[in-house]
Length: 338
Image 1: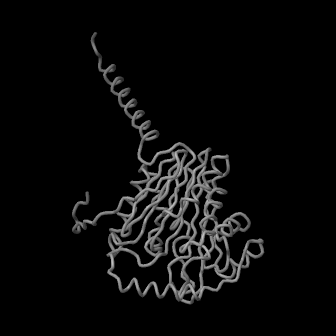
Image 2: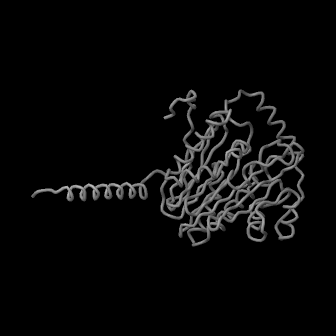
């Protein structure tokens, strides 16, 4: 049988479509970091109980926004040394907390920063989003808003923890340093969730950098830096040295890279590459990203610190070591960068 040019073109197009469909099927079913919905991911091993609380709500048909809030509340109530009232105090001996929450539907968001004595700053952030025309409340204003909303507020006296932290810091300074690793424990829980219906939400909560100047605010409550959620694309969150995230709108950058078609792993890594090419610290950023896309795929990357994150789906919770950004190769002016 004679094959015409039209037959050849048609068969070639059909093969291409089939190959693309098979590739998409592999990505959807067996690609790295892929799960059936719902899915929850969060930063650091201490995120596991938060994930499991959030996942249980999602599996029962709950909204991702509610799951994110309730999951993060677990960490805030756990006497974690980085999150909630058990966190590390600032240079004045006071624990000042930051938190934010974002709904992928409508780009709604709420944040609080530098708030003292609030048991669950993530819940205050949600009230800011749902009950005010604002996005961010800070300091005593955020505390008074929490009181007006009937949320739990306590007197905060962290001077003993502050003294203990300074003793710990002195011991760390006397120990050998690991290049690029941030000193002390000042981690964040960033938690991302996608529900049964494909709706996304995310949140962050932290006590911030230990010994920080009073009033210092990191990336965690800043929408687009510590957290960003777009229901058309996915969500991303950050942990580490906040200043190195804020200058580059890090989480927004990760989501935009996913919008271009990158897998969450690749989007996190490319964001860190882009930042490291511009930042004087190079790859010693002390920054990590997690990401979750609208298909339920997830991933992460880290630069300048060892980092693990937790992914929870119908198969249970898994602690995953994040791929690290290798040494940056700087290209001479006018050269080609591969």
